[in-house]
Length: 269
Image 1 (cartoon, rainbow, N blue to C red):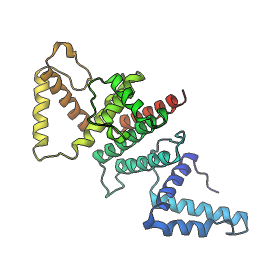
Image 2 (tube, one colour; image 1 turned 180 degrees about the vertical axis):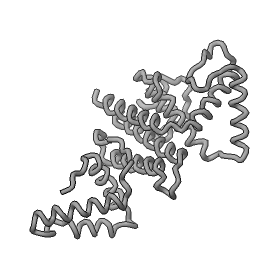
Image 3 (cartoon, rainbow, N blue to C red; image 1 turned 90 degrees about the vertical axis):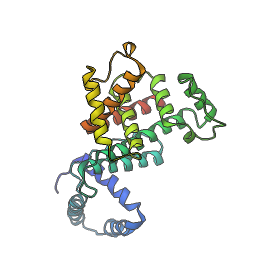
């Protein structure tokens, strides 16, 4: 029997679960049940050989090679865990160009943001046992400028930006690439709804302005204490444009893994 890596088989199981849950491909689930049901076959060698062949065919059909799946098995809530896995699969598909044969950094970031948002909401729900008043107070403690209009009844009424920022401030996660990277992903996801035909030309102009002023956009920090707010905002825009064009897929993946590990560890405290 051909040897398969455990990681590849886990990816396969995730993809099979995703496909089987889709109403349009219910035939696939029925076919699996037919072929690998408890009453299927009596000869162990025959079953093993057939299973080996089916795994090989499914891997080829789904083009599993190259998929990078974040290990969300430590997320206790089954519904959240399944959603995170699905979004991670979609993210990987866009990285590999398996949707419309096109690699899309924008869509990759969109699904990365969905995972970050799911993780942050999961953290608040579990940490505060759904107590929305305590969550609002937690956010206000770190962000006094947060002023919700009216009564907050749901976690979804609180902006992700506030929830994420308060989370990173409370647990000293503001330093390092994770915070900036996931903020960039969130910004890009929002920008996707407001594209225009003059965007590239405008972005080029911003990069030129920043370069003329002697700022290096490859660095994520300048001494803001010596600059005006206008200068600071200009640098932030240029930094965003730089990151968008750099398309650092690996850094985004690592940042998501970092966030996931932080959430899991903090919920155990």
